[in-house]
Image 1 (cartoon, helix red, strand yellow):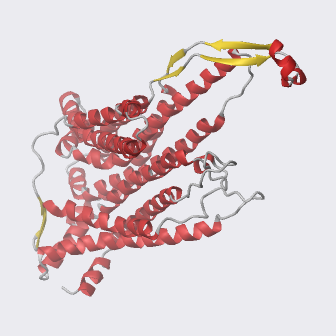
Image 2: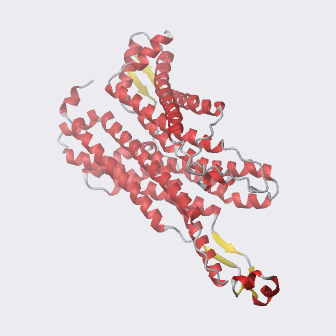
Image 3: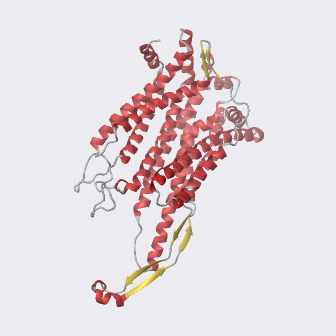
Amino acid sequence: MRPTTLVRLALAGSRTDTARVVLTALSALLATLAGLAALTVLAIPTPSATDENRNRWSEQYHNALLVEPGLRGGTAFALLMLMIPVLALAGQCARLGAPARDRRLAAIRLAGATPGQVTRLAVLETGMAALLGTLVGLGAYLVGREVLHRPDAQGRLALPTDVLPSPAAVAVVVLGLPVVAALATALMLRTVTMSPLGVSRKAARERGPGPWAGLLIGLGLASFLAVRPAAYQLRGRDELLGWLVPLLFAVGALAAMIGVVIGTGWISYHCGRLLRRHARRPAALLAAGRLMADPWAGSRTFAALLGALIFGGGAAAQRAYFATKDQLDREQNRLVGVDAGADPFYLSTMALVDAAVAVAILIATGGLIVALVEGIVARRRAYAALVATGVPRATLSRSVAWQALAPAVPAILLALTVGTMLGRGLVGEVSTGVSSIEICDATAALCDDPATREQYTRIVYTPEIQRAIAVPLEQLAWLGAGALAAVLVTVGVGLLFLRASTALDELRMT
């Protein structure tokens, strides 16, 4: 099969195929913007130390996250974390209209294509859609860089629009994302057999998932707990710390996230078992059978949302740390008679992190909607058959709600708990050492005069204080409520498609 024929067949399809390509390209566009933004932050040059700028700050910016070199790594990491729900959304979009695509691929096999050619066709379709999205994302990034380049009267910038990532780094993002998407498609098709008679898959597992996800969650927590001891033991060895600490962060976060997502499959299966054992209503029994038949559907559906919640739980723990530290500093200042206000820098920075978490949850909600609608449409003949045998549509609606909410509630609690434990693994308490400060109880003139300053000066000692950090229950409750609201909105949107998918005409569709 010639390359031009492969491209033409990859671009063919119905409106559902067009929607899948558009949504995949949109996901790649968002991931490209997040990746290029992170690379731009890392590309900010650190000036040489001078007498006027010993801290080597980049003073051409407003935001301290960009000014201080030590804060740029965390900022770039937060931007990269936004790619996780976007890539999960891309994975959900790739499954949209899968039954119709399978029939089209089977027809191509019937026309004489080999299994390898059909696989390359499916991979090419996803790769081209992702490449289209990354190219549009690169164009939007370059245009936005020119539009947002607005120095103020002092010549300072709100965003790093004066720097660009290296061409190699840009090429890795723009070309790497389509390659990853294509490889992921090839990996998902490894268990698929495309024959002229149809598309078949290997039989699903007969037993439920094992509780092995707990090992991954434990590995993630252990990696975060090891950060502080490693930093203490390796003081002065900056080169080793420079790669060891980020590695512990990356391994811990990835292991915990994969553990929670895989654990959702275990939760779904056992929720199905409990419903089958104790439920008495048809809707709950139908949901139980579906949860046990495909427990990994919950992992696929909630992956992006759970990743955002883990990140949000960790951010809530860090906010609680900064709030406790700020309160303790103000108490110390009051003990020595200094009226110093709160330092808003870290708390305002956490507000930006909270905004990023909200965006991630919003993106994950889009993935939830796509996944639920795709599942309803893919099983429309089964739903139509149930309606034909006398099952009310209201029962099917309640079954869909049970199927979404039963694993979602414990999975949300698990994700928030793991995220909070990761954050508290870094900082479990706030402590201040014994300190002393000189206080001059006189006018400014007497205090500035060396001859009179000493007789009006007293030394105030502050004791060592250790204070445990409270669990941020209120913020965690808001995160959980927002995630649950996202699931409820998803169920509501899905039920709009259920009525059309249960029409009896679906029984005659091929």
